Image (cartoon, rainbow, N blue to C red; front, side, top):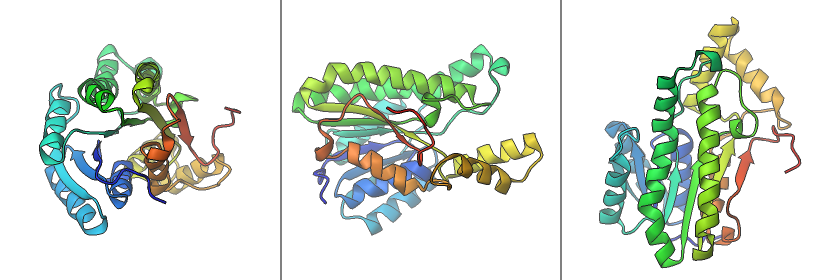
Length: 263
């Protein structure tokens, strides 16, 4: 089924590996023109090469560190030069370090804000006006199941991803009438390099193996397994599609049934 985004310009953050790459791959397979963004020039180059070989869309790369205030502007300008005005933005990036709430300092929270919240606001400020003027746009942020139920030892992610969700919910109300949808996707335990880092930390803390940590996480969800990145990407891709024009202001869990709330 066509997503109706062929020829659309998309920016995907943190897209050289993991969830971000899976999203970029999904969008390119549907004919979108995707700007791959990561801090590593080497990984960006490899991702772009892989996307160009596999998809029917197009791909360009951009090296940027979203904790630098001007980085989103540089990415948007490069997207405009390569393909035209961005019509799809997928805000995604690495997570902050794990720590208990009582150990977090003001500096830790400030750093997490620079990493998770402010880049989303900057991309929204830079891209939403043109989307609204054209009458079409998709803005999706990848957050975490932690926005529904905080995870132990991840206070920075718990606090700032919830802030992203609240911010974008407010934004969604203000741009919906202009044909722009704004949503978030909340992945559960997904087999990525980031999850392996978290598993290593938990294994060291609890004196168990990483396999035991993964097994424990997998057992918490009804699917009894870790999710695959492409499963999360499919949900993000749908929210970016023409068919999802009536869905906005939603925080969509993609967690294998881990969340037990009714809505």
